[in-house]
Image (cartoon, rainbow, N blue to C red; front, side):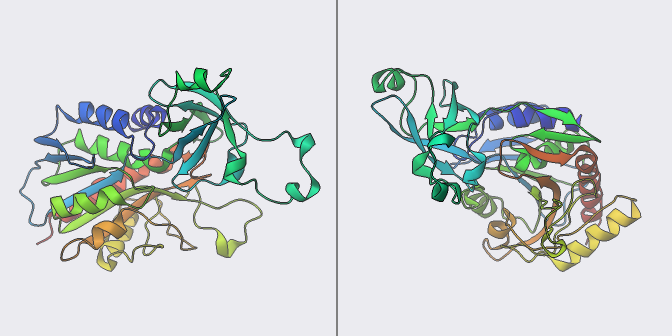
Length: 342
């Protein structure tokens, strides 16, 4: 089931540049259903699956495997770890968060100077990244170096929880939801030949999608994503992007892409015909793999479907499970429609 797959994917570590566990899981899941599977030089997982009819237009579905995280840059004499962020992370969400460090999954916690030592001036500003550290309980630098190394990736360690009226709390919903939708489609009979691309390094500049688009050379691309909700009570209405629980987000534009107008209208019509609730972005922000795919070679027509996600790029993102199921339903209808296009 889609939600079970999503939970499994969210539990896996996959900071940009270290997507191996996610890729291995998806490859194993797809193997019985795929006609061909390959991994390119940068790490994208590219899967071909034939459908009931040969495609008149080459369709590529894309979702990114990576998540935001941290990377160790130094180990202090006292055995604490200093780090940089990988991808866009608000420093305010870091304090006190549990993490797993490196291939050994060494447990640690992100620390900062004690509050009672903080000056009134410091209270008014967000701490600088250099002021944070990761505590792994090491006695000294030598002990820490036995467990971790500079360059090790760090992933947030957080529970996955269903709560409230059909909501899911987990890390990496962006973009394990897109991966989960594609994994479900891969296991179903398809109306046309499709290429599924699970991309790497989206969070650090859509790097995987750029190479994959040149390799696959699609005519049409459907990008499946998680997107910022910003629907909190104190947010002015004109700055609220979208809201979990109101259906999949069908974007017409974001910070990196103007989506194909015909496909935007098609997705809107398909949603309404199928009685699938949908929404679009009220405030334009962010960007996706669509920006890199759209600009490859002679250009690619791109469409997008996303799930609205609260607290994006934090250890505790929140999405609506109903939105996730509707996202899959709308993607199915899109494939059916594209299969009949001349």
